Length: 510
Image (cartoon, rainbow, N blue to C red; front, side, top):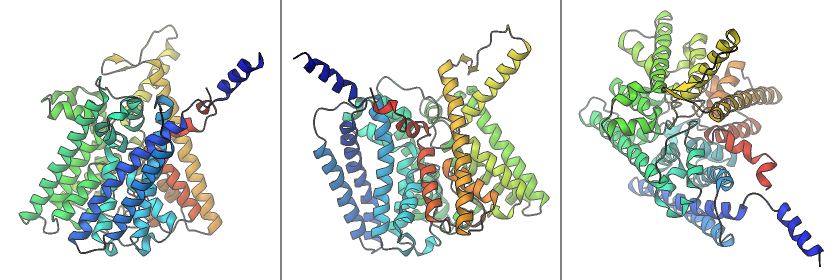
C-alpha cells in the first residue's frame, strides 16, 4: 500500500512540463480560422475567371485538419507560458504548410515540388519575400494575391490577429503576444485583446491609406501601371515589410512617384507601431522625437541612404533625383527588411553590397513588422559596451544603462546580449551550411552570395546577391540549402528564442 503514493509521485515527476494537448488544441483552432483567409484568392480567381478549386480544396483541408485536431485533443486544457512557445512555433509551421498546399494545388510548374512550395509559403508568412519563382508573370492573379496576402497576414502576426478575435486566447495571451511581436519588449495594456485590436486597426488603416495613395497615382495618370490590383498587392508587401512583388523586376516597373510613396510607408512599417499609434491616433507626434530608438532608426536610414547615394554617383550609375530615389529606396527597403527593389543592386559594386548587408543586420524598430536584430538591441548593446569601458577606467563607478531616461533592468540586458549571440551564431552556421552544400553539389556560390542568402533569410529581408539577387530567384539552391533557409526564415521570424526553448530538456519537464 505504501508503494502507491510513491508511484503516483514518480508519475507526477515524470509528467511533461508542457501541456501538449492544450497546445495542439489551440493550434487546431488557429489553423481552422486561418484557412478562412483563402477566401480572398478564391474571390480573385472568380473575378479573373481562374479555377477556384485549388482554393476551395485548400480551405476545406485546412478547416478539416484544424477541426480534427481540436476534436482529438478536446478537454479541459490550460494554455500558459510554456504552451505559448509551442503554439507560436507550430502555428507558423502549419500556416506555411497550408500555404504550400494551396500553391501545389494551383498546378503551377514553378511550385510543382513540395519543398519549393513550402519555401515560398514560409517566405510569405514570415514576411521574408525570397522566392523560388523564376517568372511571376506566368502566375495567375489568384496565386499572386495569395503570395502577397500571406505576407500581410504574417506582418503584424497571426497570433495578434487571433488575439483580437478569439476570446479563448485570454489565458496565456500576453506570453504569446510578446513572443510574436518583434523586439525585446512592448508596453501592453491591461487587456491584451484591447492592445491587439488597437495595433491591428492601425495596421489596417495604414494599409488602406497606402492603397488609396497608390491607386490615386494610377487614376490621375501619374503612374499608368499602378491599377487597383497592383496597389493592393504592393501594399500587402509594404506594410508587413514583406518583399514579394507581382512584377519580375519588383517596383522598378512603376513610376518614381509610386516608389516614393512605397518608401514612405516602408519607413512607417519599420517604426514602432506603439509610437505610431500615439502619434497618429492620440495626436502626440512629439513621441517620435523623444524616443531614442526612433531617432537612431532615422539616423541609420539617413547614413545608409547617403552611403549608397555617394556610391551611385561615384560609379556613375544614376544621377540627380534618380540617384537619391534609388539610394533612399534601397536603404529603407533593406533596413526595414521589406526587400522590394527599385533597381538591380547586384550591379552596384562591393561597397554597396557591404552597406546593404549591414543594413540587413540593423533591422527596423521594436514593435514593428520588420525582422532582423532591431535598432533597440543595437542601441542597448552600444550602451552596455560604453558602460564596460567606463567601468574599466573607473572600477568604483556605479552606472546604469538607460533607455529614454529610464534604467533598463538587468534581465532585459542579458536577454539582448543572448539574442544577439544566438543571432550571429545562427547566421554563421547558416552561411557555412550554404557554402558547404554548394561545394557538395557544384553550385557556383560566392562567399558574398552565401552571406547574403543567410542574412536575408534569417533577417526576413528577401533578396540576396548573385543568382538570388533582386531580379533573380532562390530556385538554383539544392534541397538541402532550401531546407536550411526555411529553418532560418522560421527561426528568424520567431526571433530564435521560442525555437531554442523548444530544444531544451527543461522545457519538456517540470
